[in-house]
Image (cartoon, rainbow, N blue to C red; front, side, top):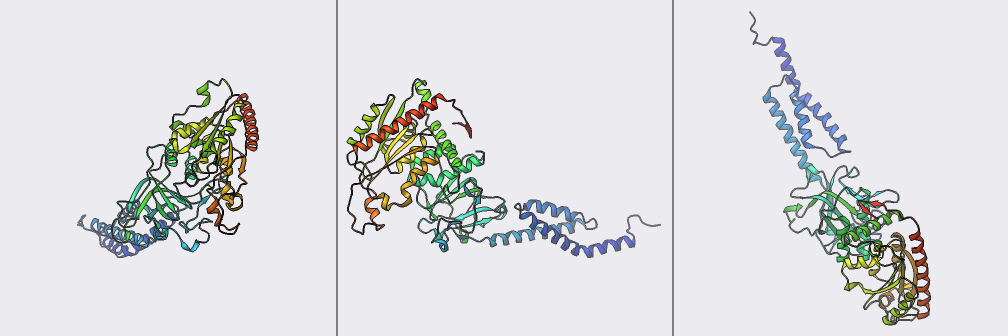
Length: 491
């Protein structure tokens, strides 16, 4: 009688054949599976935990293989995964953060900062890079970027989240990475470099929350300072407490990967506001104005005076030293005289270095006409209500030698919804230049010259601007105002 516990010869033969074919099956399965992983990795980063789970299912489906065989195969596969991960880590290539091959055109196209990367560039929108994303094949950004003297010694790479460089630190949260052709201590240049991040914040429906950190570069060299004015405005715009600027201290690590930091999510800007439409720029300045006023507890002017009459605020932002008026008292008297001629006009004379940031925000909320010499303090203009006016003054030599830089506040007025009422250029020569008249080196001599005044011209100019502003404000008061909402801020 046949023993039921004993396998038949045909059954034993079949299982033996299967075991003999097992290496072929496993090799074919692994080849197909590896191909599928490669296809998937083009769209999303591979999940090694999922790979292990699916491989385990594949291995255990071999019904004729004993548990001990499955254990051996799984261990071999996990070892292969470990080897593959090690190879991926070793294949990560760090490139110079500042690519000197493009030194002749450092701010054009892909620029010399992270030159191998292309920006996301939609019509009318900011130009930016976002990691991880479809464009980066799901890889995150990694930096070795602590050098403050030579950006070519700093470097960057992309890596899969599961296979970061050895000894790398993973920084959680959203990181803003800015490269500026100028600096962050000057409020105009700093504003130009950081306002695109506000645009990205709006584009993402303000859902990302405040950044966990900022990383600031100038020509690929690390910077850790920012003008207090700019820092406060960014803190008020994004919320979330004090603004953190990364200095990469405490990330020394060891070996070739010393100082490597990778970022859970990173947004990179290197073109300032380039590519943005005027409408998008206005949105940014609207939000910054609204958030800064809320942060500083500034009430609307209607709340302050119950809307009883049309008033016109004229502010003279004075300067000490460079590009100050030669006779500040005479200039003030001219504008005082013209202001007294207009009902509801009040004149304020201020020096920005004597005001806190919130005091500047409040003063701008009460200003309809800003009068000042060319200088970074004019960056405050976007804190005025839309359709406010700007009157700008220059010393001799700027028109001939300054280039396009002399028009930056024309641009900012347009971008933020203000009205640039023109400029007055002092015709009187200042400090003599030791070089030929049109030599570019002369600009360094004349750029900080003092500014004279023309009482007749200033009086006529101020009178016209005051009249135009009064008519605009009266028309605006008579019309029905519409309150809009941007990222939860009532504009």
